[in-house]
Amino acid sequence: MSTDKTTQTRAPSALAILVRNPLAGVFVALVVIFAISALVSPYFLSGYNMSVIARGLAFVGLVTIAQSSLMILGELDLSLGTIGGLCGVVSGMLMVQAGLPWGMALVLALALGMALGFLNGFLVTTLGLHSLVLTIGTAGIYGGAILVLTKGVAITGIPQGIQFLGRGDVFGLPVPFLIMLVVLVIALFLTMKTSMGRYMYAIGNNAAAARMLGIRVDRIRILVFTFAGMLSALAGLLMVARLGTAQPSIGQTWVLAPIAAAVIGGVATTGGVGSPLGAIFGACIIAIIENIIVLFGVSPYWQGVVSGAIVVIAISFDAISRRYLRRDGA
Image (cartoon, rainbow, N blue to C red):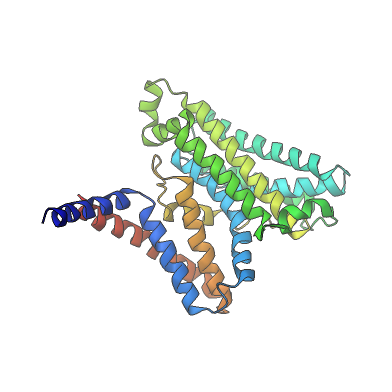
C-alpha cells in the first residue's frame, strides 16, 4: 500500500517537472510533426532528405538564434536578413573582384555584420526609437546597398576553398548545420550561464527596473545587436559558400521565418521569456513543414497558407498544453 501511494504521489510530480519546462510543448509538437511526416512520406527519413532539411535549417537557424536573443531582450531586428545578404555580397566582391583570400574576406564580412548590428543597436539606444520601427528603415538601406553593389546581378567565381563550408559534410552531417550547433551551444551558454544572460532577461522583463539595479541597459542592447549582426553575416557567408555565387536575393526569406520560429519555440515578443534552444525547435518545425510541402508537390501558391496555418496550430498547441498540464501538475 505504501509503495502504491508513493508511486501515485511521485507520478504527478514527475509530470509537473516535465511540464514546467517551457520547451515541453514545442518539443512535443516537434516530435508529433516529425512522426506524422515520417508516416505520410516514404522519402522523409531518407538520408538525402534529412541532409537537405539539416542544411536548409542551418542558415535560417543562425538568424533565428540572433533574433531570439534580441526578442529575449524585448527587441526585434527586421534588417537581419538584409545584413546577411549584404555581407554575403561584400564577401563575394572581396574574393572575386578584390582578389582577397577567402579567409580574409570572411573575417572582413563578419566584421561588417558586427558593425551593422552595432549601428542598429546604437541608433535604437541613442534615438530612443522602437527597434521594430528603426530596423524597417535600416533594412531598406541595407537592401538598397545590395542592389547598388550588384546591380541585381549575381557575383560568380567564388573560390572552391570556401565552398566546403556550405556544401561539405563531416561525419555525414552538413558543415553549416554543425556550425549552427556550435553557435547554438555558445548562445545557450551566454544566455543561461553568464551574468550577461541574466541581464538580458532582466532587461526584457523590465528595462526600467534593470536600470535602477545598476544594469547597463544600453550597453547590453548594443552588444546583443552586434552579436545578432555577426550571426546574420555568418548565415550570409555560408549561403554564398553553398551556392557558389553571391546573389542579391540572399536573406530575403530571413525576416519573418526567424520571428515565427522563435514565437513557436516559446520566446515572447515582449521580452524576458524563452531561449535560443526553443527558437531552434520552432525553426525545425517550420523546416519539416516546408520539406513535406515540397515532397508532396504542393503548389507554391499554397505553401504560405499551409505554413502559416501550421504556425498558428503549433502556437495554440503549445499554449494549450502548458495551460492544462501545468494545472494537472499543480
